[in-house]
Length: 342
Ligand SMILES: NC(=O)C1=CN([C@@H]2O[C@H](COP(=O)(O)OP(=O)(O)OC[C@H]3O[C@@H](n4cnc5c(N)ncnc54)[C@H](O)[C@@H]3O)[C@@H](O)[C@H]2O)C=CC1
Ligand SMILES: [Mg+2]
Image 1 (spheres, helix red, strand yellow):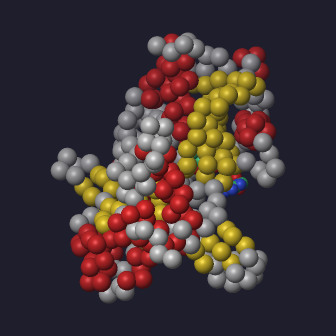
Image 2 (tube, protein in one colour):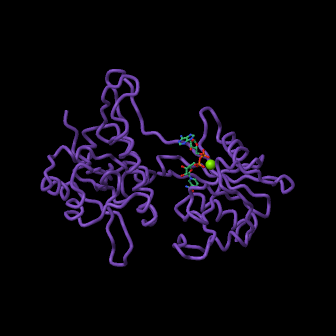
Image 3 (cartoon, protein in one colour):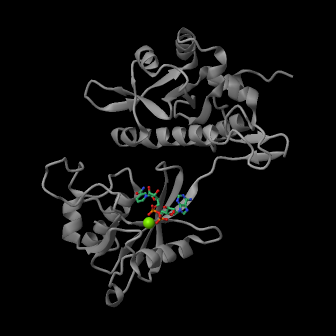
């Protein structure tokens, strides 16, 4: 039986208007689209589509010289795809990434099989490598493109069942893939990573890998091993990388991190006693790790852009998009203002 079209295109109005926020209805709408292929196909016709080319997002330069994402509607995109020689089926490869506050379903689509320059010309934008795009975009746009790219990448690398080698089929939303020969459902995966800012009470510990750009230091991080709790992973990583035993672990925040693939970063603070703070760096993992005073961190937080070639050497920190920056800023605030903040 055909479902009424009105509930397929945007979040349904909740009958309990007083108790059910717009946020709740948007989340339920997205959940419904993940489970109902027809509803998702209908929402796609009315949704916003973010284009990628070979996993690079399409950005537009604003009059002020900044960058923003550029989304098209299905009706804008269809003729463009047709002009470039693609049949209508490409649009159906779009993957659902959420629902905007304006109640429009949001999708991403990789048009890597089309000529890049021709798509850029027709859409009035530029495909920018995600590493660059992620730091050019402001606010919620950076995590949005990171999420889109992560989902598109997952689909591109999970076309076959790892048990049978048979092709897998995606649902319309792209929230899972299914192998009919083994009846296995595959869901997009992230790798859990713990990131920790260790303090000895007056200083914090930062490290750098040999591959980091010159002068960049960050909080210690590492992938969780199978079977570990977060606390175990955190204690092990710090012990392995800098030879210290931490205590007083406290949770700060988390983020999805798209580099090199999808990591789920869980950010924590931890401490060591000042009498047991001698670092013993494992040079196979880190080029250097050392303690930084509040004054050094305050200076480093003021460096707003990576130094250019020929600039004098300077210590700088991950940018505000990175949860490492948040940990370092939280630590510095706590040092300046104590537990209760400013
Ligand atoms: N968002 C942020 O603020 C920051 C994010 N990071 C991210 O944290 C991640 C982990 O940090 P690292 O110190 O490099 O980790 P790490 O200390 O665990 O060392 C990386 C090594 O772990 C092994 N490994 C184990 N499980 C792995 C998996 N699931 N995927 C890939 N490699 C795995 C590999 O041999 C790899 O070379 C990095 O991908 C980095 O991009 C790191 C610092 C700041
Ligand atoms: Mg590490």
